[in-house]
Image 1 (cartoon, rainbow, N blue to C red):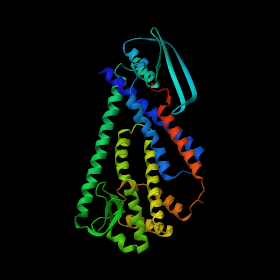
Image 2: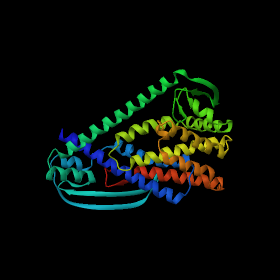
Image 3: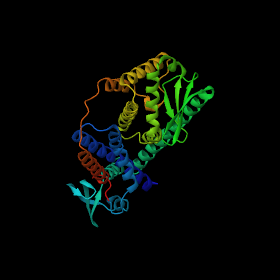
Image 4: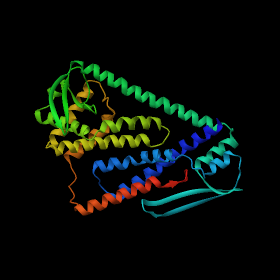
Length: 351
């Protein structure tokens, strides 16, 4: 049990380090790259989460000092090494802690040092108690998030029992139903992956003119086109599980805002006027506040997102002309940096 607890402590604590390493690289890339397309920005913000999953998949390498310490081998000396360079799949960034012992020299992580400090200064079971406690809370939070989503889905299905099909929209090879429901009170939303549909509250439809209603529908079709629900639901569950990682909820909020901005761009690309979409957003928010119902969907949960979106629609940044070859070079450079970030390590488990 102690070994399992130590392994779990190592993986959970290094998940925090992996996330922040990926986040720092993303912030650096955003700083150097300047304004990015929302889809590219979304992909970059997913990088810290991908880094956590990448390192969890790798586990604790056989050559790590973790396994030697579990066998009772004592560390005699320690050293720290930083390396910067390049390799074929991206920039090489490594920060390694080394443990000198009778069997030679082995890499170790910050989690190893913390686990041994807890073992010698608190209790031999301290790391296990901490890790299993964190795991129990993580599982409970993930289950609660899943149950909350299932309950919300049942509530929506009940409210849509008296729905009316307003029209059908073609979206590539898929047909999307646009529904109106008098029982549903909230913001418009899109749902369904295999059989997608858009729901508009009847009270909202009565307040919108034709242009505003079209703007709302095209915005929700943008969510369906990019499968935002298929991305957001697993991400919500994963972030609930990784609650102990500082900054992960802030990252999730930023991702939600970018998903909304990308859907706005889809509506504009479909020919919707900026003023119509901005007006529809304000009317929808006004009705949601008036009815005393906060937006239920996580994709529209943040109130500050509304102000940013309206400002973005009414005061757009001037479009920059980028030559095709330069766009390709920038894309390849970003991909190279992403692959390098997945391989980077900073005082965590090393391959």
